[in-house]
Length: 193
Image (tube, rainbow, N blue to C red):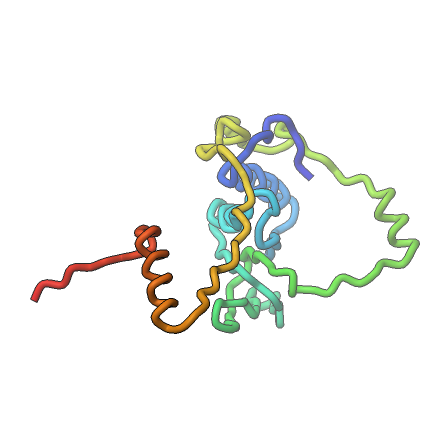
């Protein structure tokens, strides 16, 4: 775990920089074949940190992964299934690589009580910025963040449409009145022949 005031206020660019520096430190002690990230954070919902880490480490990012079907360590290859808008894609990549995974990647089972107690007592190793190597502190936290969130809000709740009653002539007349009041809904194009 990395934790330091120097990381505070980081956007996705500064966050990916800090995490890539931690991974570089780990890789000096043991080679990294696979980095697994979530699809996106629940606060910014951008999905940019994982690919940002991959870019900084110069490894391929594979997004929207829902299944890892095979890892061949001898050939340094991985076969995965990733979600697409219109279905799925099965691809193979070289290792090392970075995956951003969807929630379908795994079903979480309930842990037995001894494992829950062990997890509650676990104390992770925490690195500060001073534990990392070759860090440019200008690229961390607010200083390293070119983007700032000005305001976050939920979009307005969609309202139901208006039902137009009556015979066809009355419906057309009422619809025309609505359209004339809401000219922003009309896209009128002039056609020249």
